[in-house]
Amino acid sequence: MEIKRNYLTDTDWFDYQFICGFLYENHSVKEFLNEPQYKIGDEAISSRVLKHWHDTEILKDNRPKGKGWRKFSFTEVVWISIASQLRKFGLDLKKIKKVKEYLDAFNSTENLSKCPLLDFYIAHCMTSTMPIKLLVFDTGEVLIGRQVAIDLAVQYGFIQDDYISIDIAKLINKRFKGKKIETDYSNYSLSTIEKEVQQGIYYDDVKSITININGNKDILLTKEHIKNSRDEIKVLLQKTGEYYEESSVRTGKGKHYKLVEKKKLKK
Image (tube, one colour):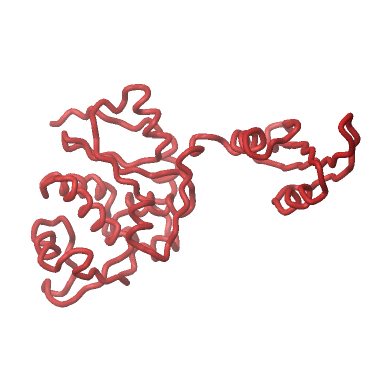
C-alpha cells in the first residue's frame, strides 16, 4: 500500500460542503454540468487520441457499441482539457489514469453527477472567486482543492513534494470562450471585513475607518471620506453601500466635502 506524503487540511470544510451537501443533493448545476451538449473537434483533440483514451479508460465511451459521433458534458470537456494539459507536461497515460481514479473516488451510478468531485470544484469556481487548483505529484499522488488550503498545507509541511498545478478556472475560461470566471488571486485568503479595510486604506484613501460589532451577527463598517470637490463625492456615491451621509467641512485649507459610508457585513 502506498504511503501518502501530501495532504490538504481543510477536511471539516470539505466534509460539510461536499460530503454532507453537494454529493447527495440534486442541484440544478449537476444537470447543467452533466448534460451532453459539446462536440470536441480536431482542433482541440483528434478523434484518434479520443479513441485511444477510450481504449485505455482515460475517458468513458458511452456511445452505443462504441460507434458514431458523441457529445460531451461540460465536466467531461473540462476533464479532457485537464488530461491534454497533463500530456503537454509530459505525463504518461498511466499517471493520467491515476488522476482520473482520484477524481472518480466518489462516483456512483445512483448519483446525478458522473464525477461528483470534479463537478463540485467546477461549481465552486463558478460561484466563488477562490482559485481552485489540481495538483499532480511525481509520486502519482493527486490533490484538488482551494488555494487557501493549499497554501496552508505547504506552509505547515503537509505538502512535501513538488507538483504540477492546473488552475481550473483558467482552464475553463480558455476552453469555453463565452464563460468568464472571475478569480481573485491576491485577496482570496482575506475575509470580507479584511478586504473592505484593505480597500479603504490602500485604494479609497479614506480619512478614517470605524468597525462596530453587533453581538454575534453583524459588523457595521463606517468609512469617512474627505474630498476637495462635490464631483469627487459624486464618484463615490456611485459605489454600492448601505447608506451615506454627506456634509461639508471647513479645515485650515478651506472648504472640503465629507462623505460617511456605512456598510453592514456578516461575520
